[in-house]
Image (cartoon, rainbow, N blue to C red; front, side):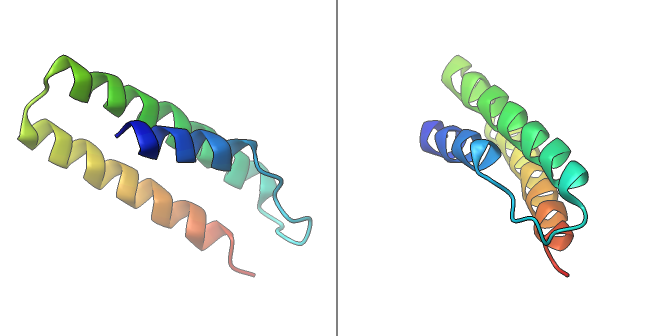
Length: 73
């Protein structure tokens, strides 16, 4: 989970190509992804249940696909 949080934070800081019209939405969702991934990492370290991890991962997965969808022309 730590590595996933690091990658999400790095992705948030990356430059979005100018040709993507939905840049504001992409930035907003990348920010949310980075924040939620960092939060999940903290929760895992605190010992949340596997069921809670599964639910959080599903939400992150859906958010990831939202970002990918915004990156299509």
